[in-house]
Length: 395
Image (cartoon, rainbow, N blue to C red; front, side, top):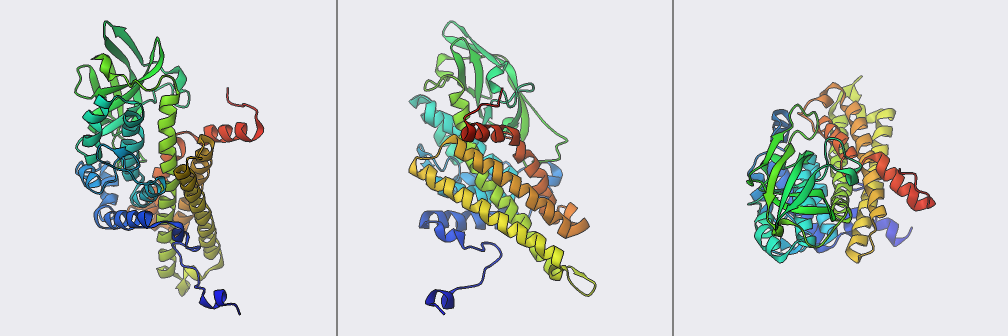
């Protein structure tokens, strides 16, 4: 018997292939810090938040103090962490709830990133320090009631009026909208699609929160209403024109989702595993039944593969070799896998699985939204189809 085999350890449930050994010291520190925060601050109450359809406002400055808001950006109070560390943070946050990870990823990848990447120095200085601390919340105004997957045909329009801009339109399904201090709004102009940094106290800007949601309930989702919103010339993001701007932001968010989905799936898997060991039927734990073991093993296998995909994306992003099509692989695969795991976990928990006493149905409901936002399954399938065939099937 070899030395390797004699020192080998059997697999453990959370990380069968010890994939976290691939992480560096920075990533492991982020993992432990965020995992502890989620365990102490989120998990005891998130079921009640989900039931009530709310998320505490004070979480934002708490996340800011942990350095999680815009953590993958540099300067302006941002942590300058590696892409892999940011991914690990998303994984641990979504172990708690997709709404929590959405708050962080919208803040950092969709609201802060365009200001950091395409904004003027004045815009960066005005907003990024406050956003990184959680003092100011941001939102990202792209999706419209009639234009989700087809943002190039958005109806929101900004027109010049002297040196000012007049902004009109409606944005829909906007995370953080009702609590935001600033909105990055994308609009048609005579020059092409432009991004505008809009303080939410500007006259003509209003929001309506979306209620009666059955998914992402521990998250603020809103409609943005823009009625003759007058903005100075300095409101425009000077560094980008066209769809490249908003799509690059979405690519940042999709990367975090690929990691976050692993966290949601892990929560479901561990909940089902522990439940199966304690739930007794016919005089024995259901963990001892073959079909239950088949479900648990399939969950474990798919979870490990999804984690490898996320880790590889992080390595490529840190090396500067990550292409948007690579991110589509992670978003498409990992969210689909997470949703399958959540559904199978629910069957192991039986009727108990539909309550918020356990995390499984909450994650399953949340993942139904994660499956379609930041690019639907169909869109990512066609993106990858074109990449591997060279033929464009998307109209």
